[in-house]
Length: 422
Image (tube, rainbow, N blue to C red; front, side):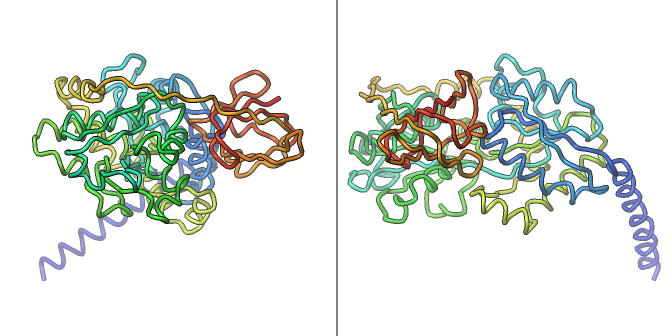
């Protein structure tokens, strides 16, 4: 009886305290705006996620504040992160979304960051990424075990997943990737795979499964290995590189490399925000990620939602921040390809000029009518397609019907390398 009485008293004390906290947060946010600072330009993938969140987040925050988006591009996201950490109000009225590489720049000792990654209040990420390495169906390399015995020629487009991941797997797990560099984009590499110039590619699974969906549907590729902190839900039968590392030092290097993939669209608040507001914001992100209207909008915009909670992110960055320098130095070395340097002979993509007749999904795709009367369409990537408007750097969100544009793309319907409009 005494235990029941104490429990009842405990509950009666706890519930009013929780209600008081919620009322305090609601009172603070009522009638206010929350600003989301996006560390990239308008029209890109990060901007699209931020605006999607802005549409739905407010109704899940006590007090139902309005959410507005402000773009603050610069230095690959460092300008915005520095602003949020050092200048923005520390009261929960300013939050941010930064590129997934930004949190790791300070940890890896790069110049520019004026913040400590693990001191931010991490709110959540609505996407995680997986790098998938595949071989064309005609290749003798069909499995990861084959990859340790037989050379696989893959295309690369610079110091990104297409080159760093195969190099990392060669140096840590003993695979036999041969990298042919010099392709202007991962799209160009996938076309090279289909032409037989190279035998495979390591690239973002979300990009491959969207842009090259026919590869998966028609079983034109072998799925060899995935690099990430956890297996993707759609790739449960594909080996995870982290699981294949038997040496603890190798596993630590892989975890450091793959951690950036686990937080594909990271949202954060400055240090110093009151704990009850941080808790409310984190809970709002979780609720938003489960919101039926939010998920319907995400589906329309072809954005996959894979929630990583703020608590999970905070724990990850606190752990990664303690990474010994020797592991950081080893990662930098392991990402370097040690084989012979081979450059692809890449012909410049043809230019197609004409007036824009259609702009879809905020600039994700455009169509022009050429002078010969034929139509030409192209997909526009927020990160890979170089957009110029009126002679100045722009973004796909600025593309409008009626503009005269020159599109550089391998073929109609493919992703453009560059778009120049006036």
